[in-house]
Amino acid sequence: MPIIKRILFPFDFSEQGSHAAPFVSAIANRFGATVTLLSVLPPVWDFPTLGMPVVTSGDQTMEGELKSRLDAAPMKELDGIAVDRVTTSGDPAFRIADFADANSVDLIMMATHGTGLFRSLLIGSVTAKVLHDAKCPVWTATHAEEQRSPATPRTILCAVDGTSDTPALIRWAIEFAQRMGAGLKLLHVVPPLSDWLTLPSERELQEQVREEARAKINSLARSAGFEGTVRVAVGQIADTVTEEARQEGADLIVIGRGTLPSALGRVRSHTYGIIQQSPCPVLSI
Image: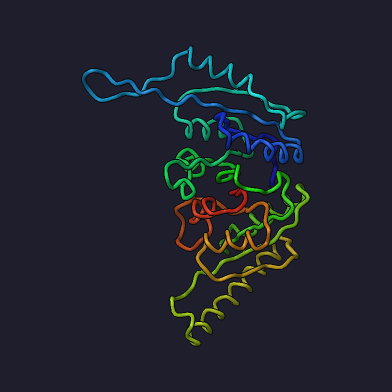
C-alpha cells in the first residue's frame, strides 16, 4: 500500500525541474508528506599534464555556492509543505539513489532529461540510473514542459503484466488513486503472435490468447479488490500502453518497475520505452 511520508525531489535548477514542482506539491499535500530538495554537484574532472584524467570532488567554494543557490531558489509551489534543502557532491544518480535508501524516502520525483538532436527519444542518463537503482517508487515526466497533465491526476492508467506481483501493484494503484481523488483503469497488453494477423487462423489464435489473458487478469484484479473494467489490448508493449493513455486521456501511468531486465514481454522490461513515449507522467513502482 502507498505510504508516502517523505518525497525526494532532485532539483537541478532547470526549467524541466521547475515544471515538476506542481506535481510534487500535489502528491505531498494529498499524503501529508515532507519534501527534500536535493541538488548534487557533479564530479570535477582533472586533466594532468601526463596520465589519465581523474575525478576529483568539488571544492568547498563550489559546494557553498550550490548550497546558497538552492537555499535562495523560489519554490512557491511548495508553500505550506515541510521542505528540507540538501546539497551534496558526486555522481548524481548514485547520490540520489543512496540518499533515498539511507533516508527512508517513499517516492522520488524527478523530470526526465534527454539530450542531443533526438531529445524526444531519450531518457537522461541520471534518470535511467535512478530507475535502475532506486528501491522506492519513482515518478518521472519526459519533457514535463510539453505535457499538459494536471498536477492532481483525474484519470490513472495502471498497466499490469499478469505476473505474481500484479495484485500488489493493483492494490497500490487503487489506494493511490483514492488518495489522489482519481479514477483508475487497468490495462494489459498482449504482444502480437505474428505479423500475419490478417489471416483468419492467426486472428482466431490471437483472440484466443487475448481471452485467456483477460480471464487471468480479471481474476488477479478481483483478488486485489478492483471492481472496474480491465482493458486487454494487442500490440507492442510500450507503444500500446502510451497510445491507450492518450485515448483514455490518462493524466498518470502507473507501472510495476521491479527488476528492469526481467522476461521479455513484461511491462517492467519496457519501462524506458513507456516513459520515453508517454503523453503524461509515469509512476513506476
